Length: 268
View 1 (tube, rainbow, N blue to C red):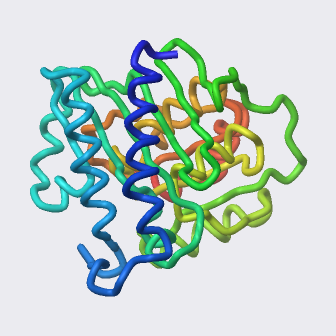
View 2 (view 1 turned 45 degrees about the vertical axis):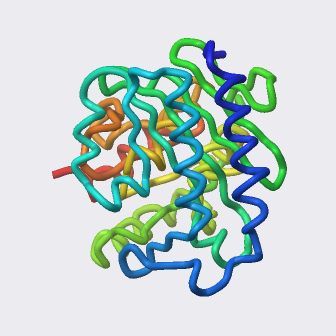
View 3 (view 1 turned 180 degrees about the vertical axis):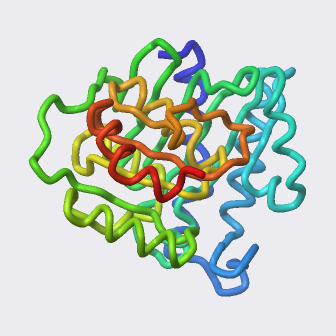
């Protein structure tokens, strides 16, 4: 585990207990806004990010902080990810679910150094499940070391996030994937999707939009658990990289097969 595992978890649990859960299923209409069409933000998102950012700053005073809601106000904050230590915060992942009063949703935090994720936390406020990973230190769930399954069904289960794709890309993906995979609905929450890949509930996921607060901690968690998440060309995910497209799988073999079967849709 990372040396800051418990201090960061303490911050997450307090944000969950004092901010996120009290507003859950208690939001008023004036406490929910749209940043862009279909992309919601609530008063709880803003308060959670403000609290978490303040507490993380106490742990590493010299580290910069990049939060989802700060990005909504100023997209240039992503430029901070290139150098030094940076905290990456998703104060409520799955805000659409949260605002509707439905699970799943989560809190995600990553620590990056020189544009490489070195630690990640994915927390489910409703169950208290904590997923954690440290670079070259393995993956952990509720304090226990975890690894991806060794065996997979003949038709692996694929959760395909197509919402930000063009209609042409979406149709081509479904057509290409259907003969090989059992396609299921996505949870609309990366804090839930990455644990599903590690536990083997799902075996394959495709993401088109790859903003760092949604993926930095999850990519590390999946890779440290023995799965594979990478760009379509096989290159590593870097938080500051603004290119699109990620393929995640419960094993490197499944990743290679999917990249061969589906990658031509997205590779230039």
